[in-house]
Amino acid sequence: MRHTELPFTGPATFLKAPYRPLSEPWIADVGFLGLPYDFAVGYRPGARFAPGALREASGRYAPGPEGYFDLETETYCLQGVSLVDAGDVDPAQLEYQETFHRITEAARALRQRVRLPVFVGGDHSVTYPVLRAYDDLEALHVVQLDAHLDFSDSRNATRYANSSPFRRAVEDVPGLNITVIGLRGLRTSSEAYRAARERGHTLVTAAKVRANLPWVLERLPRGQKVYVSFDADAPDPSILPGTSSPEAEGLTYGEAIAVVRQTIEQNELLGLDLVELAPNLDPSGLSSLVGARLLAEVLAVWGSTTAL
Ligand SMILES: [Mn+2]
Image 1 (cartoon, rainbow, N blue to C red):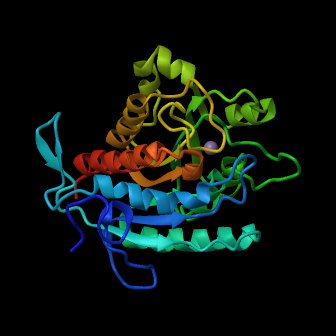
Image 2 (image 1 turned 180 degrees about the horizontal axis):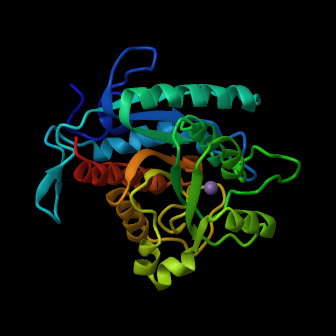
């Protein structure tokens, strides 16, 4: 029994999925893994609380046995799609290498079990050890929704913070290409920007999304294996204030979903993360509800465009 009627009943798991730790044998279509690690933030902490907060908030969006009824197509989606909450990776607090090792091993294990692994951070540093679990592929295209580039080689003599996960990832994971959507940080490192450009990354500002969304959608990868990394600071802080480093003039919810939808529809989605959501920075609870809704909606898009 994975579904009870009211949002706040039963044990809090992602979308009220059954909890099955990776130490047990199971397979499913979708598996959630919490990565409650935020020791790498350069500013306000709290993303360690996101897996717990999103489990609780996502009860609001738990699909019934028939899935979700899509108002646009008047059909059900996620019908018969099996979801599992695989629990959390325990961080080793200050031992980032040990923590990253645990994350990579858990991500590899999850990839063996499910068609779509969903990783819930944590600050953005966790995406680096997650992407290491994809090093068996010839090529992988990351679509990163983010206010910031997160491609710094080093900041304050620190190379594994949440401003560097993609710089570390391209060093370790073969065949990685990256498209970033939503950039608008005022303190963008020109070195990081040039290095990303030289690698052929596609860098799209939030201003460009606002000015011409169809132009942006045209530039998304096509026909590739993709991984979507969704930073909670990509949307505008008016809808998602609970994040370490909010930047004004962000994406609308609709723009963010349009980017993710187009990415999923024209590629093969092999993984997804939602990072940098700090529920403690938003006492209204709105950020957790928007984050949970986002996860649910991305799953619905994936379920309606993927043959299961
Ligand atoms: Mn980020």
